[in-house]
Length: 119
View 1 (tube, rainbow, N blue to C red):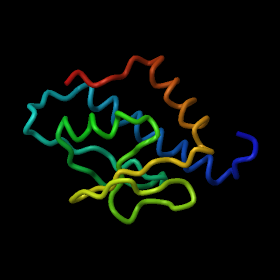
View 2: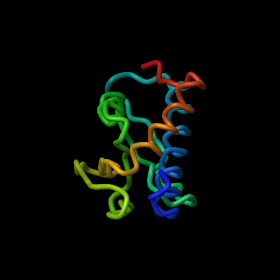
View 3: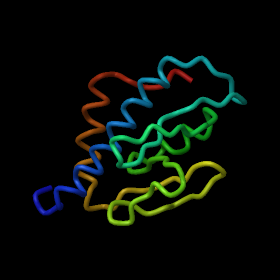
View 4: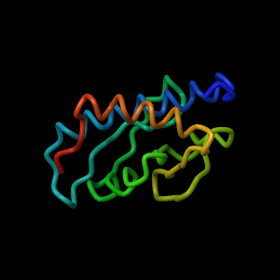
């Protein structure tokens, strides 16, 4: 991780922090397959409070790849990630491979806390 510019590493950590918040929220939700829930945009801006409405299926689909995050359109950062899917109301972005160690470290911290959706 030492070759990663600090701003890019911080951006990846910020996004992982929003993921952790959303994972915690997901553990508390009681929704049906057709319901949507509002999740915090997982962009790199630490002050972002925009919500992304997702069904449980949409949420799980993004989580299939630990390098993927969901963001409000326009919140993606080309220096950190690529847009891999565009949906109505949100984009799915995938972190650049150089940031894999940052994402893995944050995922490991999340797994230790035992946060996982129950739906």
